[in-house]
Image 1 (tube, one colour):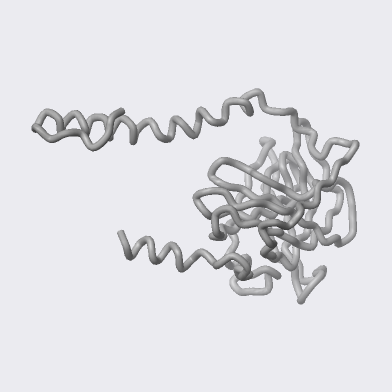
Image 2 (spheres, one colour):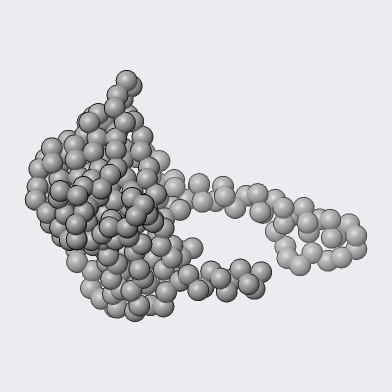
Length: 232
């Protein structure tokens, strides 16, 4: 157990250090080293979305990540990064789009997302249509258990093309003022999920098996004449 704990903490950078994003400019071989590709076709029949490197269009270096959806789909690349719980970070990346269109109840596209086991906790401003290279960013605090999935979203139930390049993470002082931006227009077309108010129930359900196991273990100890170490 001690060796496992030590191995975990060696993966977590100290606050103030800059964790290395693997293959941040998509220059490594094989293609997309360090990134996990996730796609889902939203229309049948339809053409599956693609994630490739574009050697003809890059903001930095010689190539960039190109995510293309010809038919409505979800398509993104994600990378898990371990960070100190409670620390404040800024994720940045260059983003370019072409003919991005959300279909039906589509969500924001061409964004940097920060996901955790509890869901997405932050994202950059969504894109639509065609736009040149722009340096996008998102600021977030790291929740427990101490890691985030940095996600480059090319399409969410939509179509079009999105390029990403030069992804980086920057540590911010814990007392830094977060940049709050208020927009008159909606940043997403998705309605608020009716289950949003009860998300805590899912987290509680994850604890029920361990509560039952601990209760039974305490009862078994009591039967054998040993006092339970706690009361439920």
